[in-house]
Length: 192
Image (spheres, rainbow, N blue to C red):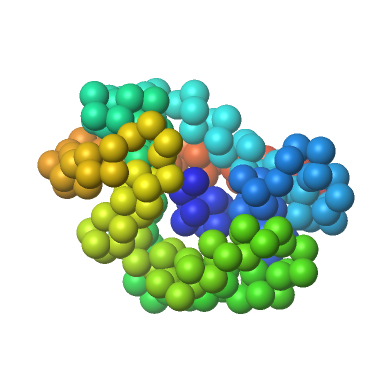
C-alpha cells in the first residue's frame, strides 16, 4: 500500500483512519465503523480502482515487471510515494506525517491489532516523512520484498528504482494530478 498517497488524499481525520483500515479488515466489517470512516474506506477503494486502470501505471509497471512480475504494482506504489513526498514542501510533509500519527492515536480503540503494530513501526521510523529519502524508499522496497511470498528477498528492486527514476517520475507526473482530480470529485459527493 502506498501509505503516503492514501493519507494525503483525505479530507478528514476519519477518512485517514478508513484509508488505512481498508487493507486490514474484511469487506463485511466496513459497515461496523462510523460513516465518516466508511468514507475513507470508499476513498481507498476509489484510489485503487483508478490507479489500477490508469495507463501511466501500466507504463510504470514495465520498469519492475521483468524482475518481480505480478508484484510490479506494489513497487510502483512505493516509488510513487517517493515522488509524492518530494513534491510536498518539507515542513508540510513533516506536519502531515505527525497529523496522521496523532490521528491514529486518537482512534486507536477502533483499530485491529495488526494495524496498530504496523503504525507503531511507521511512527517510530517516521515512514511517511522519510519516503522523501532514497534510503527511506529502499527500506520500503525491502519491506515489500520481505512480505512477498514468491520473491527472493535480495532482488535488485531498489537498484531498478534508482536507474529508472526519470521514467518513473514522468509516469507519476502523468498520473497523480488526475488521481487528485478524481478523488476531489468523489469527496464532493460525500459533502452533498
